[in-house]
Length: 437
Image (cartoon, rainbow, N blue to C red; front, side, top):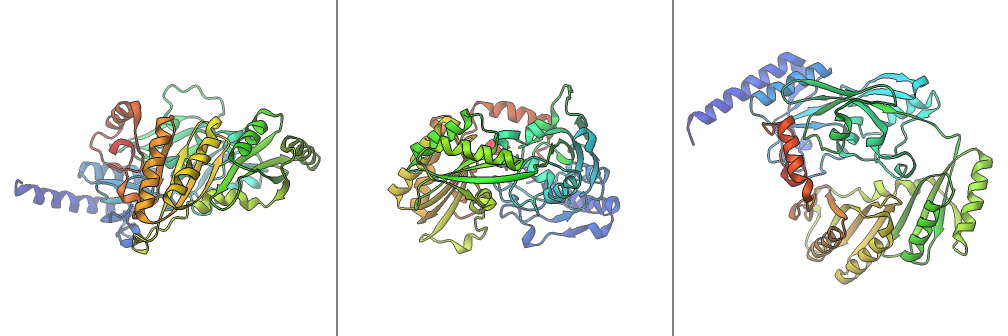
């Protein structure tokens, strides 16, 4: 190596730190500690800009200095994806936490990236409105974080995913540009769909600074019912019957485990009279299957399953945990449950799963390390052969042995081309996304 290279790097690093302190003030620049680690990789600094312009300037300075940047919101999903190849700067959106505008008459809201989902929902509720999604850990999850990970929940069966709810976005690019796309009205005919492109990109294209959402009226009342199925086949039949019916349900999911038969949860929203009519109709669909009122906490199952220990030290060959997000066709939900059951029984491991009617689900597996490894490897292979996927989430001893994303498919060349266009120096989250992007 050229002996001048380390010296140049040291100068660039020092210049960046001085620039960051000048841009946002020294009190908002600090050395990173162990709790700031990104998927096990310790960064050098944590920087908290107070405005979009400050964030863009700091990002540009890091890009010019050859430093890597990891955007951070509420830390609820910071361990998702692969560990970064480097993590020099954590760029926190904690101070960008405002609701810029609530155009309640237009059913839209403009929100800064660091605002928590719960804070936004509480403000919208004052006007009888809501952002129709049920993300995990809403009290800590931020708008920028849920968009970067495309994390929604069972409400997407009625209201769509985040890509359907977002209508505008501002993104700070590595060269310091603040790029905006979309608008504040629900009908938008902009040419380049930046919001949909950045949603789910894990912060590898730019740093989300604000977003504009379409809103929905908050329900007057809600009721959850659960249906006990005999097995996966009956659960699947019931799910499809519910989807094909005239029920106006807001969400539905299947919960299953190694210890119990599947249960289907269905959420209804509306007037009390409407809820009663809906419940009577679902009783007819269920037939001989038992239907009961259920608590709202059944919709927290996904969050519960995702609460995987972040400490690899707590795991050993005698006991390990894996959490995965799976996706299958809605018509393959029963096969997915049967597949998990068969593989888990063969490896003698415990499991729990929740799968939404859209075919997106969460699986938690627990058992001996070697058995767990074979189970995840087998399950991923079988799902991918049928057009599905398995994404490892959380940093555990087992996840360290797998690529988080699995087979990238034919889209990888296009994704790499887009990454090259937005981030040619590979500044943002290098290596964390699909195919090592």
